[in-house]
Length: 140
Length: 155
Image 1 (cartoon, rainbow over the protein chains, first blue to last red):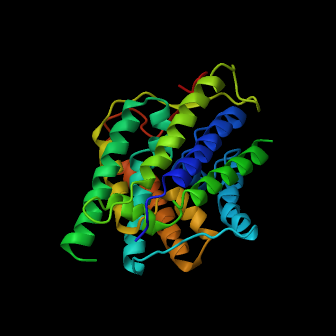
Image 2: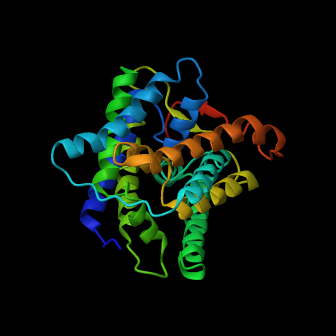
Image 3: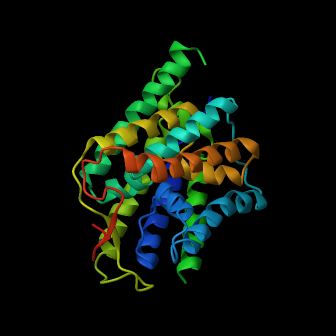
């Protein structure tokens, strides 16, 4: 069980927003992580190294945070088959739907994009439905 | 410069996820569990992020190009079609099964163990599978649905 943490959640959100604004200001790019990661996998000339640098920054963040003594609560409960199924669905779904929580849910909503609003409402609904089935109907 | 800026942005994004505890799948699942012990924190993360991005994009959009000279990118204006909704629906199911989406999954690589590696490997396979196999055979109701157009303003 985790508890409601409105202040740290809002502070973290503003940092994510700051990152999205800076990436647009410096590189002219949308900070959609599935797009950045998927584009990295496509290995197009001129489109690989900045994406790799962004991904390296994401991985370095928790290492630095811990290096300065910060605690990072972390618990993955699903078993390996569910991790694989979830990963496949997230991979296919984000490419098919052109984005995830960051691209649609943050950058797209900030651009007042109707497509991003539709995508965000859809993945929130199926996410909530999936957790309801797994936790309350199947008792996972 | 584009690489350094990208690294810095990834770092700030990652700090944001860590501070908000969004790298913790259990916390994300407790947001999606509205019938259980609901933890609304994720809504505050998105709220903070959208407010800052909304205001920031409007300031940034006054410049003709980005600081590195690249044009501002904005996805093409496409209709809300079956492909968008189906993709978002599949993504939501995967997100709900594990509690990880792409950003937190990559941050989790720097936090702990094999689970994130397994999830990301499957995610990468799913992405390549869609791009190389499924996209060419699925009916497309929008022209060039995967395309990104460069426009002069990010809005």
